Length: 93
Image (cartoon, rainbow, N blue to C red):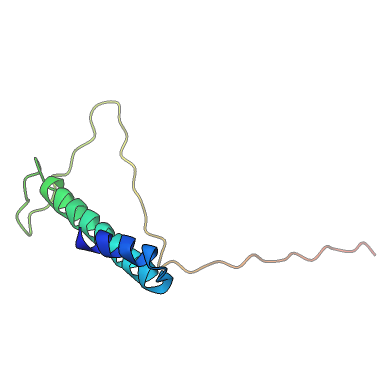
C-alpha cells in the first residue's frame, strides 16, 4: 500500500521517471504474487487422487479381447532410408 501512496505522490509532484519505476515495481510484485499463488494451487492439485506407482513396476499389458486384433508397431528410427531410384525411359530404335 505504501508503494501506491508513493506512486500517487510522485505523479502529483510531476516526477514521471520515479512514478514509472514505482508503477513497474507495483505491477511486478502483483504478478509475482499471482504466480506464487498459482504455483501453490497447481502443486496441491497436481497429484490429487493419483496413487504413486513403485519404481521398477511396469504397467500391466492388456491382452486383446475377442474380436480385437493385435497390432505390432515397429520402430523405424534406426531403419535406413531408401532413396528413390530413377528409371531411365527406354528408347525405341
